Amino acid sequence: MVHKPNEIVIIGGGNSVQEGLRLGLGGVLASKCVIALNYAFRYVPSTFMCFVDKELYHPNQGNIKNGKYVDISEELKPLPLIIGSFDTDIDKMKYPNTHLFPVSGEYHREDSLTKGIYKPTLCGLFGLTIAAYLLDFKGTIYLLGYDWSRNDKEPTHFYSDIHHRGMGYTAFYERHKPEAHFKPFIEEKNLKIYNVSLNSNIDCFEKISYPTMLDKLNNISYNQEELRTFIKEALCIK
Image (cartoon, rainbow, N blue to C red; front, side, top):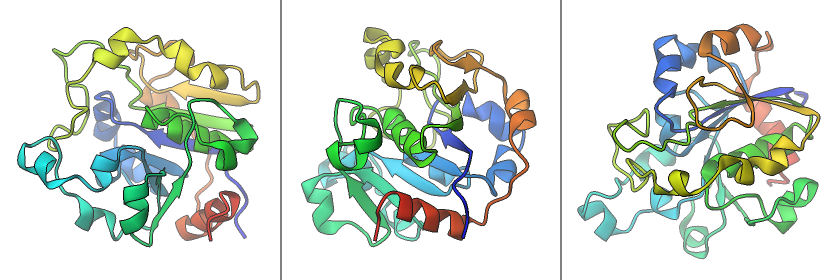
């Protein structure tokens, strides 16, 4: 029986992940507890994938034809574990590997599974809430690709080969302050959260470089199947 991890790596979509990929990030993370947000699963080995956008999971034909989304259903079906936000339409046609949870605009901490996982508007916060819950609110979390991009002249995502409505969209990040959204995690005193990008616009967590993160990662290698068994039990997934 695998014990719960004491550190989790979350892979977001920000362009800063490019640096990590150049340093061989994929090979390093193959034996770690890794949450891949949205399309990141295509590029980095992960323990499970998270999404909150139903159009990513099951885009309608109109959005496929107009180029706003691509159909990745054949890539999703074989994934070992997917965790997403509850949607009635998705619930009717979800794949056996997919488990949906209620979401909430409020942070419910240890009651997140029943009262709603924070925060449905941003997959980065949805994944971070799950990570904090799995760690029992103590341990280390590394945020990769959490750039909060505000300049639409620069690439917003490290994966430029797939179209989705978030690509190039910076209006939300220009209107909102990250501190307001990340406040519940700033207040978690037993969680050490690192933002792995020195240029990120999220300043409420200690920023470190990719070489520093690679030095800090513990030397524990996880059997991914055993790790997923623990995660399913922790999240009450049957």
